[in-house]
Structures are given as C-alpha cells and as structure tokens.
Length: 571
Image (cartoon, rainbow, N blue to C red; front, side):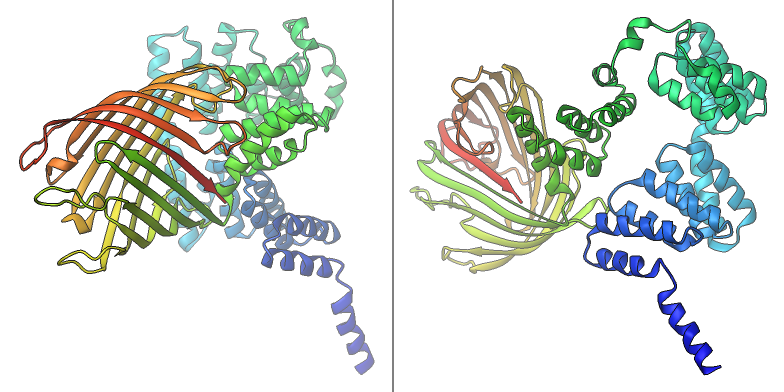
C-alpha cells in the first residue's frame, strides 16, 4: 500500500502534462513577459483541453496586452467548460459589450439578473440597464425619424441595428428589408437580414439571403455569410452575385483596404488589411497601414506591434515613418515614462535670458486614466531683478520638486495637479530658500493643417490654452492663450521653415498689471536637418499692450524681440 501511495504521489507530480507549461507561464507573468506567458498558456490549454482555469488565466493575460477580443474568446471557452462559473460569465459579458457584441452582452446580463445571487445579480442588473436604456431610447428616436422620412436609408439602418442589439428581431428584419429596398446594391444588408432571420428561426429565408451575400464581390461580406451557412449549402455559394461589380471583384484586398481607409470605414479597412497581410506577410506597407488603422481605432497596443514590424522595412522612407510612429506611441504604453523639455529664450523687452524646463517621470497604472508623477522644474533668468526704484524679480529663480497626478490627454486637453517645494537659488529679503508650492491646472494643445513636421507645404493653425493655479503667488490663477497661424514653406535641403503670426493673451485672477497683457506680431520657426526633430528655433517680433495699468511703472505699450529654441525628449 505504501508503494502504491508513493506511486500515486509521483504520478500527481509528473503525470499532469500541463504543469510544467503552467509553471513557465506563471514565471513569465511575474517577469511581465506577457507574450511568452500567452504562448505557454496556449500550449497548456492544448495539453489539458478540459481545464477551464487555464482558459481563464490565458484570457486575463490577453487583457494585460490589450487584446480584448482574444480575451473574450478564451472566457467563452472557459464558460463552455464550466457553465456555472458566474464570475467568468460576467467577465465574458463585459468583454462582449466592449468588443461591440452588445446583443450577446445584453442577453447574458438579462439572464444573470434573473438567475444569479448576491453581488453578481446586482452587477448584472446595473449592466443590463446601462445597455438596454440607450437602446430603447435610440429605437424610439429612430422610429420617429422613420415616421417623418420613410425613404431615409440611414434611419431604417440605424433602427434595424438597434433593434437587433435589443433582440427585437422582427423589428430589425422589417427595417433591414426597408433599407435593402432603398439600396439593393448594399450586400451588407443581405448579410444582416440572413443573420436576423436565422436567429428568429426563419431558416429558409435566412439561407436565401446568406447565399446571395456569399456571392458578393465584397470579400468581408462573402466570408461572413459563408461562416453562417450550413456545410451542405456552401457549394452553392460560389461565383459573384448578379448585383456585384466586376471591377470591384478584381480589386485586391490591399486596394479595397485603401479605399475603405480613405472613406473613413476603418473597421472595413482593418478587415481587408488583415486579408492582405495573410496573402503577403512580407508586405511592410500593409504592416504600416495596419498600425495607422489600429491607432485611429484607439487600439494602440496593436498599433505599436505593427509599427514595430513595419520599421524593419528595407524601404528607408517607410521604415522611418514606422519608427517615428512607434517612438511616438511606445512611451504612452510603457510602465514608466520620462519626459524632459527645455525652453530658453532672450527677450529684448527685459534685456534678459530666461529659461524654463522640466524633467517628469510618470507611472502608468494599467488602464486607469490617471498617472502619478515625480517632477523637477526649473524657472530662472540671468538678470534676476529690474533696475527700477522698486526692483522686481523677473522669474521665480527656483527649482521646484513635486509629486503630482495627471489625467491622460483627451482630445488635446490635460488636467494635472501637484504638491511640492520651491527651492530658490537666490537669497531674497523676507523669504525663505524653500517654501511649499502647490500647483494645478488644465492645458489644451491642438494643431491643424500643415504643421512643421508635415511632408507637404501649406497653411497651419496651432492653439494653446493654459490655466495654472499657483499657491505661493497668493493663490493666483494665471491664464495663457498662445496661438499662431501661418504657412509651412516647402522643405529646402532638409531645412523646414514656418512663417506665422502670433496672437497671445495673458491674464490672472488677482488682476496684477504684469500678468495682464496682449501681444501680437510676426514670427519665424526653423528646424535644421541632422538635428533632433523636437528641436525648433523661434524668432518673434511682438507689439504688446498692458490690459491693466494700475500700479504699472512702465508705459502701457511695449515691443519685444524674442529669440530662443524649444527641445523635448521622451523615454
């Protein structure tokens, strides 16, 4: 008996074929080598296909690398193996909603809110309402639109789509049919009708619609229709549809992707690009376009992967563009990101050389939209004080050390706040060398048209708005508007030049004269070849006016020649 027990124990240690693979997968997870962990979990799932826990771990690893669709499919497999796992059911439902399978997500949440217990039931109830309410409101709104304009294709299509997502299949079929009558060449509608009729049990009507869709000249529609057809009908799905366009049928997947991309149909473009990549895995132009498309779809984890592949292209221009895109995206996805910038300039108005700079290290916390950071700023000048009867300091003359929190940029807008200490390198009467410093604010930056890095010449507009609260200036709120518009000239021997007109406005909440002025004038921006792309030289000639002159010891107007450069790096 002792020998038998020892044998069983030894078999338990060595007889599980998935165990060594799982140990490697967990070790890879601890080392944050997620791609290796995915490969090990997949091998373990093949070695032990009946284990739901492996599928769950694989799904969570896919989420770590930003692949929600792959994670969803693994949760679906785990749910098939263990249908009673309520937690997995919820995870699967949430990912269905995130990956645009809203009808399926709604069905699952509806079932759980009726059958689950405790917290799972409450979660399902809340999630169901968040999905169902907008669908109901949208159906009511588009039903009214259809009543007012029965020949409006978009209204019928939107109503049908929302009705299908809400499982009102009869209403969906009715309006898909109405949309198809208005646009009979839209083969996507045949696919939609076949799918809805199949779900509602109208098999004969579904097969007719899907057979017609399977003969479409649009590869994406035809492939999706074939997946829905039973095997015995697939032999009838060959050949183009009579309604198809022969010219379109001859187009390659790459050409169709380009057309879809230019028209703004990014999901269709993605579909065709994947087909083009399968047809020619060494086409670096397709890899670059996949990166661009994923980037526009806000799937930056995928975009970075394709840009990384495309930058290995033997074509110098393509590789350079892919490398630039990779470097722009990669820091935003890294756990730690360090940014440094410096802005020195000379001002004839003050006859002084000023310098501003910052080194900031941010920490990325998964998918949270907030990032804590550690910052060191420098604000100083060479002249230090004015030569008037009542001298005035021309800058803060300090190093500022702070801990802060910043929100992820949203359409050019960033919110931030920090607490720290301002350490002055000058000894000022009545003030300590180190004082508490609390700052926060909002920054908005957007550019339009042919910016300095554009390949082609043309007009441009850059807008910059900043609001900054500073505690050590008597809790003052400073507002800056700095805008420029102009024309980017054609590049000459690598030299890039912009001619612009500056329009700036500064104000503060305490209404101090030195912080309330407007200025405007022409400017020139230059970037020389061989130097870093983020190094830009500027020259501006400005005419200004103080908008408040109480306690102003100077004239209400001023002229300023401003010369300097800006440089920034991110790692």
